Image 1 (cartoon, rainbow, N blue to C red):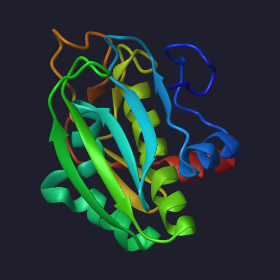
Image 2: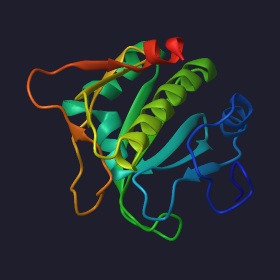
Image 3: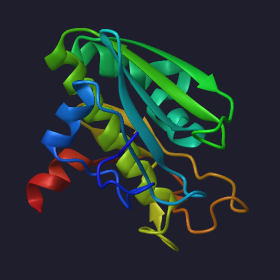
Image 4: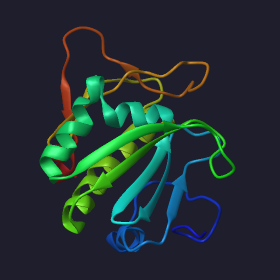
Length: 179
């Protein structure tokens, strides 16, 4: 199956609205930063649901502690999302988290948008955009506070460190408005 650019992978998780609509219509799309990168995402339609497959670490970030983040996404979007871990296979040669999203088309689109923004933030935090910097532990995206924990240094040497001391939140929605 093809993906957003027609090549085996794309270099970022930023999709246009048209690309997301293609995926919601049933055309699978996938993106990754590299075969060994922290963020891989694949979206496809399955009956009346949407399946999003992301790397295990990105999935942990999106699901959140005690599934708090994914429940909040469901509350905001009006969806019901089931998550499970998937073993490596021929398509993705590493452990992944799968999000099975149900609801009306607009509701699913809202959930997909929030999840992809969160995965993009996780990608930025772990793949070098904030290398040698400290960042807030919590990252607010579309009303959901995602908790960042630095992955193992041996696996992700360019990942950002978490600020010590009192916990602060970075509001990514406000940062976009300022840009």
